[in-house]
Image (tube, rainbow, N blue to C red; front, side, top):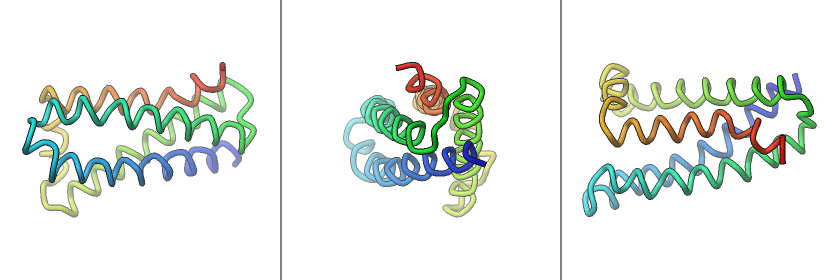
Length: 127
């Protein structure tokens, strides 16, 4: 149960920030500099926030083992993907378009960042 709570807290903190930054990226930054450049700016910010949030959650919920950290990251990643798919449906793009977007350069960079988010609990546990 501790691992589930840690994953929920980690996902919630990072998703809230990423939602705001993503909205700014889509509405303001990408039209000015292009989607790929905008994602290249966004991903390091989100990964830094992920580092901080994962470190907090690992300490707060006493995630001690590598298995717990891996489970925390995997569950947080699943929550993130489900949230993004749901968001795509809500805004009218649909899950198919969301998945197809990952084949673009910007989408692949974003997916790499999301995978970094998934492994962050294991990375901070070691430091």
